[in-house]
Length: 454
Image 1 (spheres, one colour):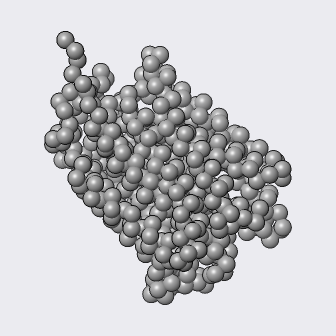
Image 2 (cartoon, rainbow, N blue to C red; image 1 turned 120 degrees about the horizontal axis):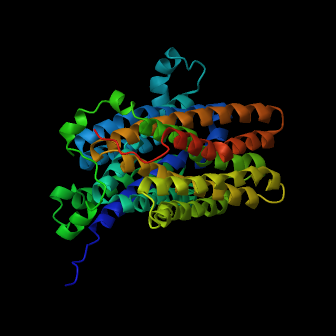
Image 3 (cartoon, rainbow, N blue to C red; image 1 turned 180 degrees about the horizontal axis):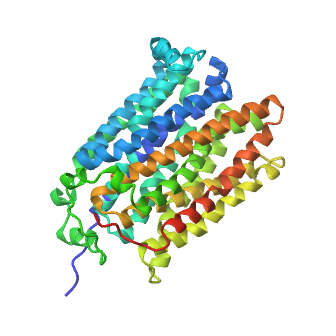
């Protein structure tokens, strides 16, 4: 007798998460693409821009902790929807940053931002709202993936939806400069921010938890829950509410994930937020001139995300357990960003050398990201996945704040010395070695796969 067809509805859910992540990164990247224009218009220094981006990263980091918790309690459907509404409103809010800055300037002065301009204050607040909303994307996405995919497919599914960040990063330089040139920078924030509300229509039509999903066949439901190695758990929001952060922080598995995120998230955000400024500072490129190199660079990262998510299956098919196969793949991936060390030495030949080498490093990051997220669902029960993802996301956010502030300080220092190339050499070196350090500490904390029983 032929086996019944499994069905593919789980990939519809993966597609929804992919488009949400694409929108997430579109909204996130608009500012970096407009930074050269806004810096000239408002007279921002590198430190001003670093403060604006750090406001996003700091609020994002703190909110990740609570976002994971809230999504575990509300459930994926409403948690994801509320997060997307908030970040879409935050994206649109950038268009009114001067008005927001005038309103909140006295408050900003009172809490330690004396001397900050109206525009800086307004953009910091807009980025804070954006960061608060966007903190819900990955906890919700990882939770949905854990709900709809067996462990052996999760890193591949994560790689696919995480490639939405690459697509968003590609679409942004193609669309934002053109919109801003034609209708002004305010319209760019408005136009891109509106996409999220369109996505909500499809989310409410097609998403439901598997146990209540009428479009999901029994064969596919059985396949989703077909893992041989099951973690004992009561998968309910009531049970999730009883697992405290302090209890989760008592596991080395939590610290392994958090350290890996702290060391590497900042690298991706550095590339995302500073590359347009780098092309202008070192090669005099801005506006539509950056479209092609950034599109090429972020196109490369899409292959890393999907290929990196699939890579561990090579080892899993050889008999490794999912976590062990994932860590072996991550070690190889961690070596690839070392190529970024050659970006500046070869940059005098052509700007394409750093673009391609940074593209390879950023591609490796996306491969790393697809796998490090999945280590959580490898080791933790589903009821705590979003909470642990939130803890790691907070650590990654603080890593991003550190990288952004360090970059702003170094670039202002070396700009004053007339040696901006040296500043970027230092930052690229930090980016290159971050992954091998992260992998080494993660392996030290969790040498072998050990499922957490809660």
